Length: 75
Image 1 (cartoon, one colour):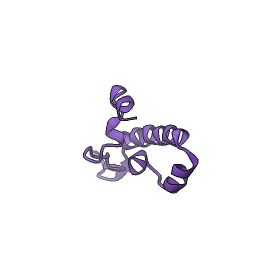
Image 2 (cartoon, one colour):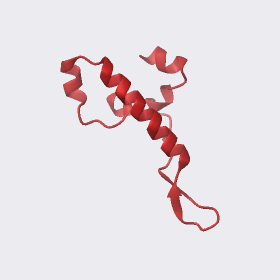
Image 3 (tube, rainbow, N blue to C red):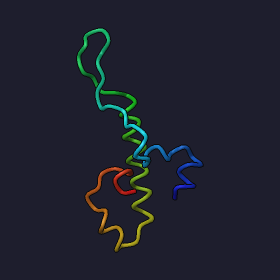
Image 4 (spheres, one colour):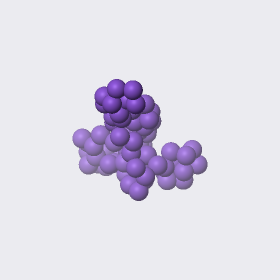
């Protein structure tokens, strides 16, 4: 799986050393907190990867990762 993720430049989603974007950022005009588009993209790709990973797991392994909500946590 690591080789596939690296070849598609998706390994950062499971790499614990790669920082996850903050869910919110400060709006430069108002200083209000707003949703971070980088996090929204991150979360979308992460959930797709999580779905793909779940699809490859056997039942005994799947039961061990139930309740984990990110590809990084399942890895």
